[in-house]
Image (cartoon, rainbow, N blue to C red; front, side, top):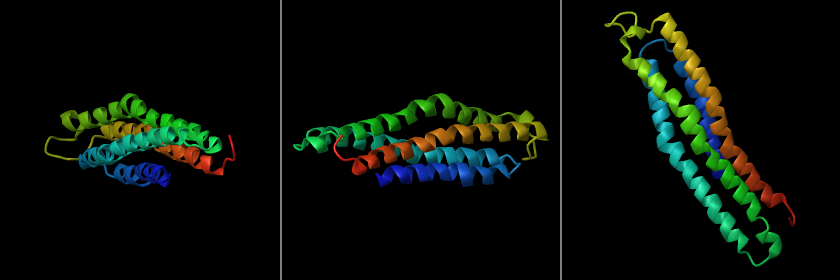
Length: 163
């Protein structure tokens, strides 16, 4: 259950620490930094969420087979936690990934820069980037909170008596 809280902590680091630092940069590299951050999130958090959902589903199934009825009844906590973590996938696809793509596209549009040889973003483009990152941060908060909620649901099974 602590691994759910760890995943949530990593995701919240993006929101509270990494993206605010990237927002201080007004050059082309801010987009590259953001892309690298989201890439690392895809590499680590995506598979981790899948593993968390699978481990919760397996735990729910195995617990439902427990010979002690009071213990077997706790499967519902883990099934609910599994369903909670599973919400991360569609949320990312619908709400976060499109922002990742639009921010990446800014890097390719030469009109976003003061001059072709400069790496500094135009004021309008900088504002658009900051708004996109703010939106990403708000949407990512949902993504970051779901594993934490799942972990707390699973943890609550330890505190319940017979269900």
